[in-house]
Every structure is written in structure tokens, then in C-alpha cells.
Image (cartoon, rainbow, N blue to C red; front, side, top):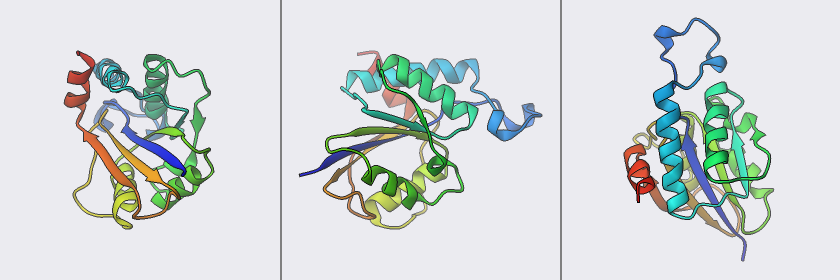
Amino acid sequence: MRLVDCILFRHGIAVEWSDWSGDDKDRPLTEEGMAKTSKGAKGLLTIGIKPTHILCSPFLRTQQTAEILKEVLKFSGTLQFCSELFSEASPRQILSLIETLPQSSCVLCVGHEPHLGNTAAVMLCGQPLNGLSMKKAGACLIQFHGRAEPGVGTLQWWLAPSQLRSLGKS
């Protein structure tokens, strides 16, 4: 049976809107954001996460987050920039993308809120729900046995950034 693990990971702490005069897509991570993301990535390493694919939104802060994850997790593949991870994209687009991946894949998707929370809700419940949101540098693992369709994902874990960082200290 086909088994795919999908990790949704929100980008790290970025420069605040009020402190940024450029285009939102170019807003970078802060030094604190980079450090906390790296510590959170070590938490993923501690629990044995070994991605076969890393996908990210084309925004600078998600690219920086994905690069940190790639380095810490010793991922040797190429980062894939995906419009399916834009905030405006339908969560169902990620499911379609996951369907194209080989059996036994572990895909790490780096994106934004509220898109990731809505995507998790569609994966788990078949529709967006209020209340599911991911903190910056937080993550969840949703597993698909068979097809990646709305409402058939199984939540394996949902970890706040502080929990990931604590795991990274182990």
C-alpha cells in the first residue's frame, strides 16, 4: 500500500511588516528566526525525519527556512519552489502535488499561515476549519495510506516551535 508522510512547516520569524518597506515576498527571516528555525530543525532530526522532497513557497522567508531545514536534515536533493504553497492557493493543490510523489515519500512543505492550517484541515477533515493554525517554525505530520485525498490524512503529531526546539536539545 502507498504510504506518504507530509510535514507542514511554517516559516520562521520574519522581519515585521511595520519594519519592512519592500515587497512582502522579499521579507527575510530575522536572526532570531534563523536561530529558532535551526533549533526546531534539530528537533525534526531527533525524531528521525528524513525528507525525500522539500517543497517551499517562492517567498524569501520560506526559502530561507527551507535552506535551514535542508542543511540540518542533511537533505541532498533540490528544493522545489511551488506556487501550491502560496497563501492564496487552494489547499487541494498540495494534495494533487502529493499524489504525484512516489510511494514511501516524506515530503516537507514550507509555507505560510493561514494556508498551512487550512491545508491541514482539508487533509484531515475534508474542509478548512477555524482554529487550526501553526506558529512560526512549528510543524505537523500528516500521513496518507493510499491516495492523498481530502479528509483521509491521519495526524501523527502537531508540534509547537518550543516543542521542536526542546526535542532538538535531546
